[in-house]
Image 1 (spheres, rainbow, N blue to C red):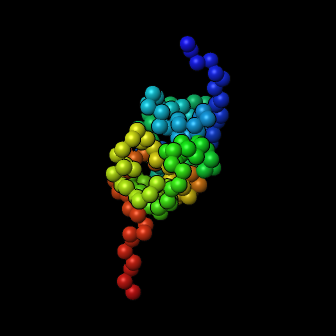
Image 2 (image 1 turned 135 degrees about the vertical axis):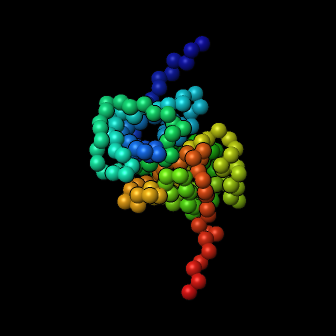
Length: 181
């Protein structure tokens, strides 16, 4: 029997970063929020409505504006949201875990650096976070993204997703070596 339950979809503003473009527009999400959209293995692409495009090296200069653009999710480095709640329900965002620990981290890719807090149940496990499961997009909170070669590109977000397949380095801020005085 076909599922005839009504689907509730809403449009959420999103700031999407690829290696060469910044796309600001709206994404259509179900009750599972942006986490559900980005980690849905049945669709390799996404649509962005009312999409404004800017090149990374000139992030505030509008290049073009489209009613709809389509993009491959695997090419997305990060997606920044206006509200933490837009990521999705807590059970989806936390992967079903009730209690988690916040770990301040720095994540680097070939194009961006992101500083923020990753929530993880129990002791931090790099290999589990980065390699296990099917979630390629990992939530990071109170995040600040900057472009490595263009420090003027700065995106701050209470809730952001980063593409773990694009990560070069993940460092725990608590393991930073203090400067010698």
